[in-house]
Structure formats: C-alpha cells, structure tokens
Length: 190
Length: 438
Image (cartoon, rainbow over all chains, first blue to last red):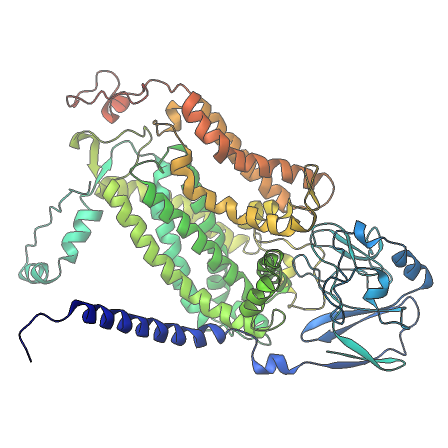
C-alpha cells in the first residue's frame, strides 16, 4: 500500500474491461431466453412424410400434413399443364421458381415447379404467401380464382395451375417443398 | 399544477406515525382529493376515470378466468365452454372480460378523439400524449393475444394472419421475416406451443400497462388537465378541487358507461364477437372471410388496401411490405401529432377549419372500419385506398398547413371569461395573451 494517486490509465482499463466482461456475460445470459422460443426438438423431429399417390386420379387433388403445414398435391390435367407452360415467367409478379430443389434465381417456368417425368404432379405448401391462409381450389366445388389454380379468400390472391401468384397481394409463388419420388406412385416430402 | 402541495394534515396518532415514514396518504390526498381541476371540464373528460375502471375490471375478471382456463391446443376450446356452462357465474365473468375488451376500446377511442379535438397533445403535454400512444399499443397487443386464447377458428386464423405480417421483412432480407415468425410460433405453424406462450404474455402485459398508466397519470398531474377552451389556467379561482367536483362528474359518466356495458354483458354477450369463433381451430380450413375484432378493423382496412396496385400505382412484390408498414405507421404517426400540428391554438372550438378536418378524420376512421369488415374485392379495395390516403393526409399535410393558413376565432381571455361571459371577474393582470395573433 502506497499513498500516491493510482495510475489513471490503469484504472480506466480496469473499468472498461470490467464493464465489457459484464456486457458479454449479460448478452450470453439473454441468448438462452431468446432461443427457447425457437422451434424445439420435437417440432424439428417431424421432418419427413411419405404419401401414396396411386388413388389420386387426373384432375383430383389431396391435402396432406407436413411439419404442421398443409401440402397441396394436384394431379393436373393436360389442359392445366399446357396453360401453365404457356406463361412467360418474366411477366409474372414473382419470376422465381420457389422450388426447394432448385437454386433461388431459377425462372418460374412450369418445368421448374415440378419433377421431370412427373409433370402432372404439382406438390406445394398450401399456405398463401401473403399472410398464411389456406387457399381454396383443392376440391371440385371450390372457387379456383381467375387462373384456374387456387384462390385465397382472405385477401384475394389468385394462383395459376402451376401455383404461381398472378393477381392480388401475395408477394411470392407458393413454395415447392423438398420432396422426391421414392417409387412411380409414392413421394417422400422433407 | 406541479407546484400543488397537499393540504393533508394527519389528525390521528396513527396517521402522524405513517406520514413521517411513508407519506402515501399525503400524496393521494394531494393528487386525487384537493388536486385543482379546471372548472369548465365537460363529460368528455370523464373517460380517463372510465378507462381506469376498465383496466381494473379486465385484470380482476382475467385473474378469475385464468383459474379455470387451460392454455393447451387440445383443452383450450373446451375449457372456455366449461367456464360458460359449468363454472359458477363463469358465464357472467367470461362475458364481462370479452365485452370488457370491446368497452375498453370504445372508451379509449373516445378519449383519444377528445384529445385530438381539444388539442390536449400540445405543449406542455407531449410526453403525456406519447405515453397514451404507448398505452394504445400495449392494449392492442394484449387484446390480440387474448383473442387467441379461446382457440376458435377466428382465434387461430387471426393469429396466423397477424404473426405472418412479420414475414414481410423477407422482402428486405431473405429469411429474416420467416425466422422471426417461426420464433414467435415456436414451430413451423401456429400450434399449441404458440397458444401457451401467448397466454403467458397475455397475463403479463396488463401489469406493464398499469405501469405505463401510472406514468401517464403522473405526466397529467405535472402539466395539469387541458380543458374545453384549451386555455392555460391563470388563477386558482378557475379551478375546483378534484373531489367532490370532478369525481362526482366522473361517477355520473361511469354509471352511464356501466349501464351500456352491463346491457351488452347480459343481453348480447356475443354481439361483438364472431360466430366462427365457436368452431374449434382447424389448421386445414381457413374461414371464408377472416375479420379481426371490430376495434382493429380500421387498421386492417389500411393493411389490405395495399394490393398489386395502389390507386393505379403498381406495387409488385412490395405490396405486402408496404401494407404492413402502413398499418404500423397509422398508429405510430399519432406520436408525432404534437409536432405535426403547427397551430398555437389548442381547442378546435376556436379553429373553424381544423374542426372540419377533425370531423372528416372521424368519418375517415369510421369508413375504414366499415371497409375493414368487408371482403377485399371490387370497389371496397379502391375506397379503402382512398380513405387510407385521407387518414394519413390528416396528419400530413393537413395538420401542419392548417396551423399556417387558418385564422382562429378570437380566444376568450381566460377560462373565467368563457364561463361567465365578458363580465367575468377573477381576471388577473396580464392574462390577455391573445395567442391567436402571431
């Protein structure tokens, strides 16, 4: 113990280091409290679903659940495929394919929305990209919108027979989830 | 006002003992018994007290409901029916809480329009007004979280639509919005996990609200109350003690309010709700027409006004983001009102043009509310877009321009003169400030 004034630089260093240590400690304590709200292990575990497509006739559609979300599967007619193929993607509100199997900037041509050799099968997450409603168009009696695909009744988004947004407030085409054909008539989503 | 000292003098030994240790009785007496209030307050000034009643009623009924409610996706819907049918007086307490939320908004909207009409947001009451906007935001969040809890179709799809608002941020930075939405949901869709956390937050927020209300009242008691003339108080004779004058007037207003409240609770408990909320939540079926509770309809109309094109201007993929931003902006813009209004005269009573603009704004809000309840198609969209423009036009440029170009009517020299006429005495020297002349 000496009676001279303590070195000011040394004191500043200790104050800054002490405060920085406390700030890092506080931030690392906050992290678990933020992270606990993210999807938990049990939600992540429901990753894949297998679906048999054999009973779905041409022109029919089914809705299955995957990760708590509805997935639309439609066995499209020739007319529907032709109508979808004719569209120039550069004229669409969203020109990107939105297919989980393809790079994000691939154009939204109909071939990029389906699997090669299975052009009749359109598989999409059935959640409107506007605010998350379930669009109509899965059953015969449903309103299918101005483009013969799907119509979201909440805020009036029209999707075509390739699930692409054509009219209304939705910003993106319906998402194509990751899936593969495990046999000629069976797919695995996720 | 801030200089007002309590006239409280403890008489008993017990009172003196407390007064030396924690002078809470002295503070309450000074702030709520002999606090000077303007002598010309009208019934529009009773809504502060009515809102205090609403807050307490919601907390008391809410605590009781939480004793019987089960926040789980499998049990929530049935537990509400259990409360309505089995719990002793549950039918009444649940209705009081559900109708109470609507009545809370009725009162808060009248309270806000009162503030706009009489210029209560102007200096020195800017912080008081901003705290009020914060209270409105917390009320909206609490009401939204609470509407989730019955777990009916409207609950489920209302949450889905509103939480999805944040996914608009994907337009700015891909993945940001989706990340926030999944964080709010605790999954990849709205589920029982979401319901559970919403229940926790719905119980928390009213106490946060109470804290901000205390700050709001504190700020009010620093600046003092505004009054229908918008003039500053110039002499003690222009005020009356809060009790019994203001308190008895408050009680008359409160009784009328409670009569309406009770009538709805007992005779039309579901009138303000939506029939679809008596169908249990189903993640595979969206109701044909999703509408929020009536008190959110004007804001919902603004959200939906932004479709592919806005009054002929193409918006493309920015439509959703702009809709969300406009909806939040429609509330936040209120906080800037004290600086957007450039007029030196507070009360619309002396502002002929502002009076017209004010009633136009009231009509705009009602029109947006009506349009919010209609489907987003055809001419409804165009009208929603026109009224959205008018809503924002009131704040800018109408408010700033009116202050510059409007000629206010001559102001009375004091509150006394406005009450007693030209012969009004109690006129202190130097009161004739005539702020209408620049």
